[in-house]
Length: 510
Ligand SMILES: Nc1ncnc2c1ncn2[C@@H]1O[C@H](COP(=O)(O)OP(=O)(O)OP(=O)(O)O)[C@@H](O)[C@H]1O
Ligand SMILES: [Mg+2]
Image (cartoon, rainbow, N blue to C red; front, top):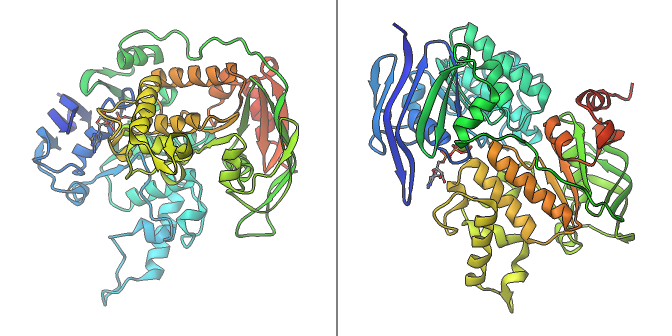
């Protein structure tokens, strides 16, 4: 007889107009790594929110048994008390507090007199950081860390809570290959210490690497639970379970039609916004031609996002110098609106902070960067806004009962589709896409690639930043590689391979 640390039985959860979960069953064995897979909107995050008490007892149907005991969690604290700790898909750290403060938020280390003991807090925080391999000082403010490091802080925070079942909702979505690898190894280390985990990920190669079992959800229903080894589960097998059919190609076919240079950056130099002596971007040159898809590869911290943001209306950096040419003419992109007016769009990697207003509805998020297009005398025509949003809902296959739905209520992948819609609607000539398929399921990725290819076929210039090398290799006509703020290599599609890219990615100033 197998011991299950967790059994979720017949879980049903509805939102107005949406049946997010229907009679879902999930069984996790003691000490195993259990993967939860499914398309965007399949119900993965919702199921984990039911488990962790985010959706309290009474707001769903069905039973939760933890170590054989029926549980009726009334909030997150009550599930944490049993050692169930969830790390959410959208990171939930407080940007202007330090690492240490975030780790012990609500769980402060107190001295005998009941005041917060900051020495103790810092010492403990350092210990936790060491466990996840983070070298930062506990006093560092969260907003000075990249998303990858924030993820590690979240895990350090979980460790401080004596975790027995760790739930990771797309933990590596924001991480590059090396950091993802470290994180997966961390999960395996926890496993050896007897900590079970549930991991949600759209990166199927990672699932294959760490998971012992996998449960596949589709449209809010359990499709199957498989034993990774005994059932010889392959990536294709998982995809079939997720989408209900075979998906033979991961990248759509395309014959590029490349024209004149549409966008060019010369001698681009950018300094760090706080540490003015630190050069973040060092003499970068790049160009994009009409109809061309150009990739930028690089490790985390190599300066890819800083480069893109500094170009896009100087939304990052200080003391920026260099020239930008659009259709051969020099342009000034000193503000985001100047960039938009010049036909440049930037789809951010950090959709929560820069890309979307989660408390506003889908239609407004899509029209936000182009209100002029649907306004008469500065008054937004709401009917037109709805028509536009509806067309994107169809084109991008955004899963929602209504475009009046709050964007914050969409599943992660569907939020990403809204960000993309917003920028495509702005009608750009040059589209900079920073991690465009982060958190997107394999089927929807294919749809997004098809849309990107269409934009290129219309003669737009596309720049794709991605940490997934297969994506860079599968989509780009030409690839720049960045390391330490410089472009260390440039390769054409034909000569590009994972190895060549890695070689340039790890090239240091030496
Ligand atoms: N608070 C909410 N209000 C209304 N609908 C919601 C809410 N939360 C989730 N939903 C809907 O429930 C369904 C399941 O969403 P969920 O976030 O669980 O998907 P997911 O499997 O985690 O997807 P992804 O891979 O994109 O993160 C979706 O259709 C989503 O729009
Ligand atoms: Mg989710």
